[in-house]
Image 1 (spheres, rainbow over the protein chains, first blue to last red):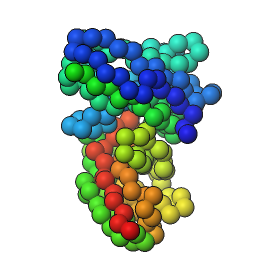
Image 2: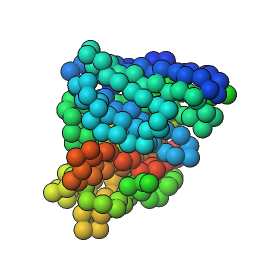
Image 3: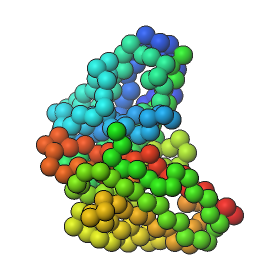
Length: 115
Length: 113
């Protein structure tokens, strides 16, 4: 158990809909990262937040947005969903803000299926 | 685009044998990390090697880094069935104020009993 929790574990929705994925980092970790893992694209870094502020941005679509709240939990919002958005979405946390410089602890993921 | 590319894509070995996976990357890095992922589960951090290090050990794992060749290898000695998983390298690009970690496509390792 990494200490990172993600909800829900599974999500099935229809094209055009909007969903919110939630992540609670390990106690004491200030950074939260979001990743998308699909069969054809592999593991893609989406975005990082550090202590409530956006720190780094990866391959995140404009239809997607995220935020980190004062209690450090984070939410990833996916809107106007397309079939291609079906994937595993992982959240990870780390103690510091230097992306890649310290160990990231991954949550169990949310499996999103868009029908 | 992928920064780290693992080689081979898939590897099947007998239990007890050693497994070697390689990772190549394109641009200068601050550090390189190896992660393991069991099917459908979250990634688990294995080891981090910094750009000024050449070799690092952790239990049955040995990681090397050759910055001149922009490559790293992960060696798992005396493999066990529980080592069956996908292994990813991840690089942190040097010199970017908004640097991001980039994962390779992974090596799927299968250990035959």
